[in-house]
Amino acid sequence: MGWQGEGLELAAPEVELERLLRGAYPDARGRFGPFGGRFVPETLWGAITRLESVAKAALVDPAFIAELSHQQRVWVGRPTPLMRAENLSRAWKADVWLKREDLAHTGAHKINNALGQALMAKRLGVSRIIAETGAGQHGVATAAVCARLGFPCRVYMGAKDVERQQPNVQRMKWFGAEVIAVTSGEATLRSAIDEALREWVSDPMGTHYLLGSAVGPHPFPWLVRTFQSVIGRESREQMVSATGAGALPDAVFSCVGGGSNAIGMFHGFLGDRSVQIFGAEAGGTGDAPGLHSATMAQGRPGVLHGSYSLLIQDAGGQVGKTSSISAGLDYPGVGPEHSFLHAIGRVKYVPVRDSAALDAVREMCRLEGILPAMEPSHAVAAAKAWCEANPGRRVLINLCGRGDKDMPILMRNL
Ligand SMILES: *Cc1c(COP(=O)(O)O)cnc(C)c1O
Image 1 (cartoon, rainbow, N blue to C red):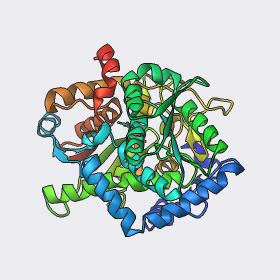
Image 2: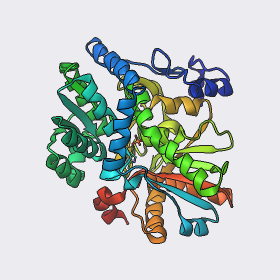
Image 3: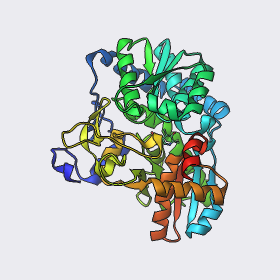
């Protein structure tokens, strides 16, 4: 990690982990060690500080928690199952468990955060919700919850993604959302976030920006993690009740785009020192610039979308080009808490090639009768490689979404 010479202040890893576990991070400035913060225009200050104080009050209000868990149960379908993958276990000579977030309403973990923030928006007193989306899963989740709670909804989506994700565009429209195709920049997720932030600046107090990953200015990385932590909390309880007290996994795997499903899963196990934790990022087709979205392996610290974190940059310090077979992992940045966990070494981040992720889709279909999304297939591939090197161990994989949305890509590549 050559960038550690850049004046980033971090204490010893064990000290920093203790700070995180006892809730000292994010600190008052929204930082995890040196990472995070709130790099926003003056005009957004009122909205993000209001969001922080309303969120802190709601999350300790029994009425809010009761409403959230009720909607999680009857509308989202929680708790999602934890499943032992018997056939994968046999094939990999390991004990393989899957957290089935693909069975959550609308087909991915995105709904956990969308529901939580939309209930929060009622308390903010805003009259409308805006969101960005990449592959469309966050847009669909937000459009769905806005339909249910009665918010007008506008979703910004890169024009390139609008082209390649038509079924999700149609779903959003049926839920009553307005979909805006963004043509600036590379016309993908990064441009969609740029545009949503721009729109928020024009009406910060009347609009809630329902950000879809553990990125952006404080309090978003913390708030999104809080709503996604249900994944790790349930997984831990389900694993203990299925396999006996104290019987935790040896290793836990999630894919990392912005990092929301991963941070939600990881928080269930960060305090268990015996559990190794791995994030799988998009290794694309090669290590050369532009061929991957491997932010941890190839990024340097910088500011993007209101937060200081690792970031893929070109030689001149401009945000670098990225690519991945999975739209959900195709993002040059990553949530600040992941940069922190990487820097202190509590989580290991591994790039996984497109081809390995496709092999994992094939294997999951054939052996378990599950069509996984391209994103978690990166985590499946990373877990398989780890099991080959560490036979006979127990692994837990967050299967954070189903593959129906990827049918066009899969039909071309499988
Ligand atoms: C959006 C998405 C991702 C990437 O987002 P994170 O915030 O990194 O979780 C991964 N998997 C699926 C299925 C998604 O829809």
